[in-house]
Image (cartoon, rainbow, N blue to C red):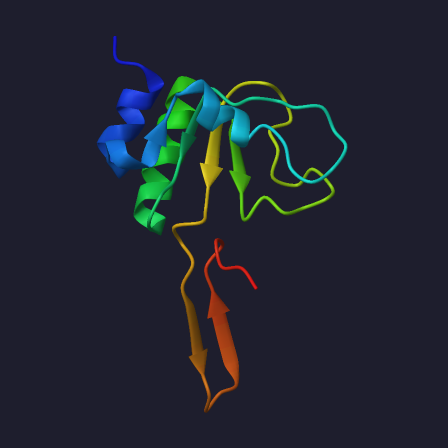
Length: 113
């Protein structure tokens, strides 16, 4: 049976998936004082279709997903609630579109200041 990381690699490409301990450790905490909770795998989707496929896979395998933006939250917002599952790093989805005429800005989940 293929590992979770291998299955996710089929969705987003091997370059954007990691099961390596040092990578998972970097995502195990944010700026807050909470104890680390290391995910099983980190995946960086590039578009909504990849997110949909990841969610479908996680539902079939009954694996939790923990979404994360920039990881600069001091309140634990991007940390896994339990020490397992898929950490969904949204930083590849970082485009911002501005419509000057309508005065509307649309930012993807990984956009930062």
